[in-house]
Image (cartoon, rainbow, N blue to C red):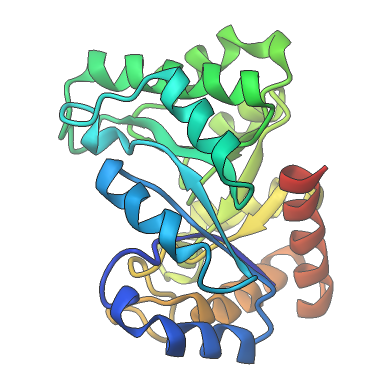
Amino acid sequence: MIDSHCHLDHEPLLSDLSNVLKRSKDVGIKKLLTISTSFESFSRIKDIVNKDDIIFGTVGIHPHESNTNTITKDEIVKSLKENPKIIGIGETGLDYYYNNSDKEKQIISFKTHIEAAIECDVPIIIHSRDAEDDTFNILNEYKGHNLRILMHCFTGSKKFSEKLLTLNSYFSASGIITFKNSVDLQETFKSLPIDKILIETDSPFLAPVPNRGKKNEPSFIDFTAQKLSEIKEISKLDLINKTTDNFNRLFFQ
């Protein structure tokens, strides 16, 4: 299995990293992608990726942080070139639910990340909440540039997923698909092509059932994989193999 999105620089994961890694390996995790959200976050990630061969990282500014963390395309490109274990850009995108940052600054930051991803030919990890139209319209502006898109913790509408498929997007399922009230989301993932799906924890957030309400960690991805295999009506082993192949194709080919 591969946890395509976690935050190992957040507590309680960071201070217990050796045990978190052991439990991850015990359930069969082969790679962990730890995601940058700010300059401070990235400074920790640069150290974390060297702690174990299975850990990889990204560089980027979360939309919540775009008021106070202004990053340039050159800074992103430089960070990628300096460290071979930094394999993606993000998480970036738009969040109009909380609006922790000015919309215009979110959009400018999002476009900066997209342009860096195009220049470096690496995947871009996208956060989108209550911003389906703007997210799609901005991505569609770059349609001719072979942008490698990963919609992280996808909770959008089926219509949104169908539009994103025209851009060759990938979609990552989080523990939210295990929640009882996520019927629409389960139906959306049922409809998505299996070769466009990844799995993630977004730990330490969004722990799946039966651990909902606890601090999440990468090893809990096992429960998400089980639920997604039921949704897709395939064996858990097939689901793991497919999502692993998808991650490796997106990030390493």
